[in-house]
Length: 76
Image (tube, rainbow, N blue to C red; front, top):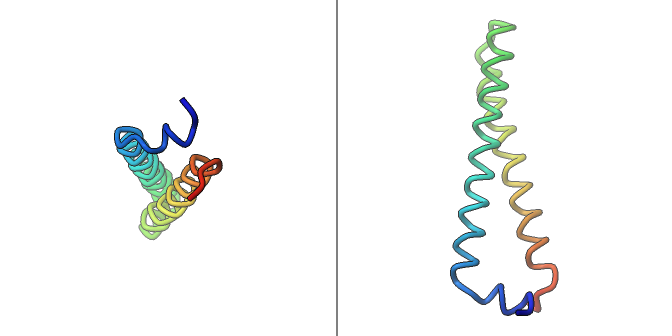
C-alpha cells in the first residue's frame, strides 16, 4: 500500500491525532513537573506556570513537526 493511500484511511488519521494529543499532554506534564521542581528549589511559584507554558509550546511545536513529516509525501 502506498503512503498516500495510507493517509486516506480514517483510522490512520484518528491514530495520528491521538498520538499527537498524548505527545502534547506529555510535554505539558513534564513542564509542570520541572516547573514544580524548580519552584521548590527557589521558593517562587512562577516556575510552575512557566514550565507548563514551555511544555505546551514544545508539545505544539513537536506536533507540527510530526504532521509535516507525515504529510511530506502527500499531494495536499
